[in-house]
Length: 207
Image 1 (cartoon, rainbow, N blue to C red):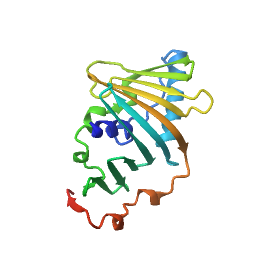
Image 2: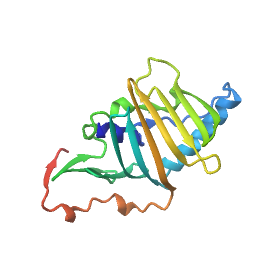
Image 3: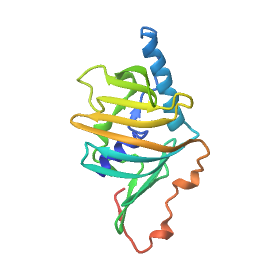
Image 4: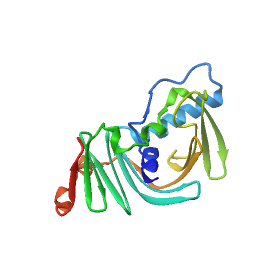
């Protein structure tokens, strides 16, 4: 279940693609929603990088929290029972007393990744006022599209910083509360695996 979460959060970037442009045939509301969604997207996945703390609740049966750092094709996360460093070439996943090593682009490091595919052009967008900010709703254009079926993203109405994310994939619905969001100022050194801290661990190279 934990891997489902990180597929979700590290959509978190390799899984979510499709730059595209806002179609002129869209309604004013849809155009505004897509433009704001892209601004939020760029604040998280742009070259400047971003970091945030999260708390997740998956259909009331699984809860966890941690911190994520993201910059281009590099990422890092840490929670109470696992950690991951991805420097864009090599990915290190620490679980219990073991370190698993993967190529950065190896989907085996997360067997649930394909379930969270998200191509922005395959979705319809809308936006509405919410008592807590602005609510962006993103829904599949066709039921034949695989991956994420719906996203409801609550953002700050002034800064567009993400506050809460609810994602549906099939029968799974996950709610992620986001705090301490900061865009920019992410040094690349944070994505370097600190091997010296794990000298007593078992290393399993899966590259």
